[in-house]
Image 1 (tube, helix red, strand yellow):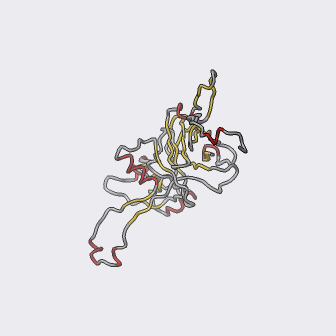
Image 2 (cartoon, helix red, strand yellow):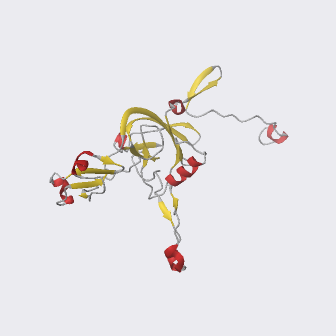
Image 3 (cartoon, one colour):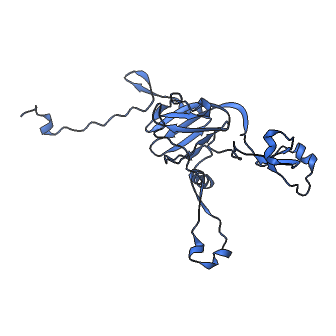
Length: 245
């Protein structure tokens, strides 16, 4: 299993994970910001990968059979990896360190971060965001636009008439969706992925990514998975006879 992402430039040969248990793979990763990644089982190939199931609203098509739909207001149910994570987190089933991946062909990149949790950034960056005209609201003026910087998930800036801000036209104040992610101090996180259940964990407890030590015949052996033995059973009479009797 490989952990590929922005931290290793999506390399097809780097990011090998170590098997630390049944169906469980581990890797220590140093991060200083929110980083996109995916799990992939094949070296040198994207033939199969695991990411996150995108968020989708689930609404019944009420207008097709009920005229009351025009006055019917309902909060949509959500599907996807993040919806599952929030459901489990709100009910105390998971901690902020756990989430579930998706092997669907349309699965998107998952997020790793320097806080060692599975949470995505509060503001998902839009690399293609363009500047657009901003109309002042109560309490806002040109001085506000010049100094506010980022408010929520929106960046504001005074129009400097540069080519970069040409999409803002002649407006004096421009805005765009943030196109960067939160960063901070570098931190090493343990990333665990179970390729049977597709759940993954990101934690600051690096011991969970360490190989286990098993005592075997008077020596200590380092292994990446616990050794298992089968209990002896009595042999039948037929099994005890030499072959051919």
